[in-house]
Length: 631
Image 1 (cartoon, rainbow, N blue to C red):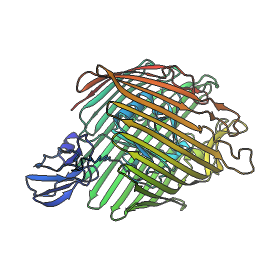
Image 2 (tube, one colour):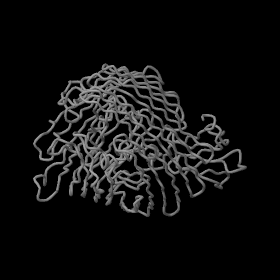
Image 3 (cartoon, rainbow, N blue to C red):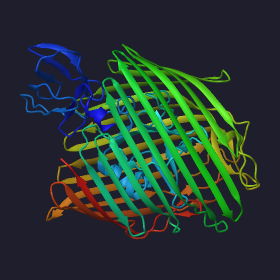
Image 4 (spheres, rainbow, N blue to C red):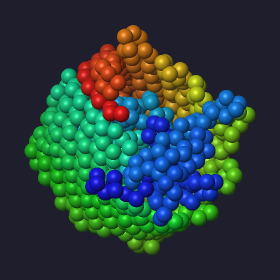
């Protein structure tokens, strides 16, 4: 596969840091004969001059001998006569250009997610709440703006990896194998392939120019992690330990490339480990295995793109105490889409999913979607419709207005949206066993919302504030009933509103960032005791402070504080998990131009807290990391 990438008939145009430059013009002697695609790739079109010029707004022109197949041209940022440097932050993602409330995390943040868990997003990305629990094979629950975790879509390079079985990814992928990740808050169904009615996460694979890089990490808890990347390939090997001492193993393999106008990718993961039950239950013994494969391919022809994708996942759950359980769940998915990139982008998709389960039996789901999106001036819009195999239509839409104010780097934006989410197979058909039970009478959710915000982003200072309001009808929530049996039900009406604020500065040698999220998500079911009460597991506030500075002998000190308010665990606000604050510290010392070592401590003061009811958070944990990054 590496030979195919290097033998592709074309070359890449990139920024000096390796990020692609889409839309760069290729020409010679004052005439232009092509431009790069959204991944910064230009495909040779025939007999062209030996010497060419590459031009892109905000960059200095490059003129030279036509690159060899698969090579890269690096463009430097240009400085205008005014002395103002135009910062161009190109990404390969799609959500950052369509949803204003989007944060892009790069290499250092992904390394933190890999070594400290997805829960490290708490207090770092506004509007996001993560619970990670269950032992060496953890359950990762990500909520956005007071929504349910299954309202958050997760994608790889724009391809959804969530299962129709439970609305969560089937496999346990290591974030370290990716190059960046987009985290978008707010309804985005139909926006560039996302199906998240509360928000979306889009993982982006390594760039084709990625030099050889790897990290090796050892934790005092007994966990050991290794991850390596080269060009469009990445691999991860992990030994995981749970908070209760359980042990598990996992691996992730990612491969992407292109041949001429064809782009393709493969993502696979396998994991197995022991499970841990809540502290209030009898001691649990058992293990879980997960496997998942995802593949995708896209062909570009002028204004048209044609894609196919597919995936298969398997989860086996075996428990021996306090009672016996042996469940196996399998799901397969196939999809095809066609896109016309005209004045308005139109995308049609056909998707089919097959689910086999010893618990819920066999089911299949077929759906078709049609979306149209476009931008004119300060307006950007998206309209979509999904039709289930029973003929039921579901509509979505989003309109955004964004405008620069006063000065460069200061913008205002406002959006309105309407969205939907259909029940998962587990929601509908999970069999009653005295502990849990599905609900075949569930209705699809409908959300309507709006947001407005301001952003300031300069070379030194950055700041953002956003207010939002979301009204949801028939919100699906799993909670124990009067008999103690967990079952999903529709909350006839709920309201989520809040303010997200982040600010900080970066001088190059010193970095400081602080975030605060204040979110009230309430049950608005009239004539019930729950009317006006907070929805379970939605903290009213989360906050975080991160600082980084060079102290001496090239040593960099990083410090962070993360806090979360109390979370009610029932619908009537009688039981709750207390608020908590966690402190982290890291020392980083470069050993050479390509190597570095880090020593860190997670939860330095050993604060006692719970991720979810009965599952304690991670205690004080020391970490040693060695990093190599080639040139």
